[in-house]
Image (cartoon, one colour):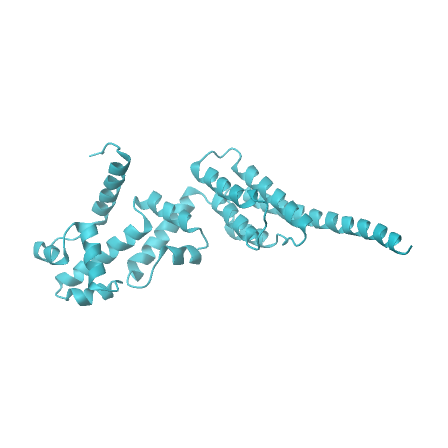
Length: 252
């Protein structure tokens, strides 16, 4: 007989807790949307509000979080038919469509919101900042994955940003810099075996391959002809290769 009142009091208590959590979560998501809807977007303030989003624990909270995240994404993408916005929405829908809420779902949501709110000029600034670092730190272990983690953007987003700004992908840009610096050392009299590790290559063979890919010649041939890669030529060559792959007409 005592079990019946207990069940009756438990259900209202749980409902009250769920209502309180939903109110708290809705307010947190609303604050995110207020910051994301301003122009220009204050990225630091947006990140602060995103960090305040409550982490769901119960099945009800996880379901409510998915609904709130989807509403935010749709509201931001509404009116923005750009490929970048639609791709971000598509990727997020894939995350939530399975009906699962993993521990990093909020982190992925936050990353998607930040990417959507970044203007094209911010993308260019990011590419130029990392490009400047590659110019200085080319000899160290610079990878696309490492840079994406450091700047808290997706690997795909960073590579597309580079291609949009420079006309070539991240690895092509880094390879061109390393080859250019390496050939400078070779012209100055340094042996190829020493020049390769000095610009970030683990072996002479890898350096040879990179030089051929950029210039079409071996390091020895380049030294004899006293020529080297030019970043503009590298970009044109990469774009020509893409046109051939897509069978597009050349502009020159």
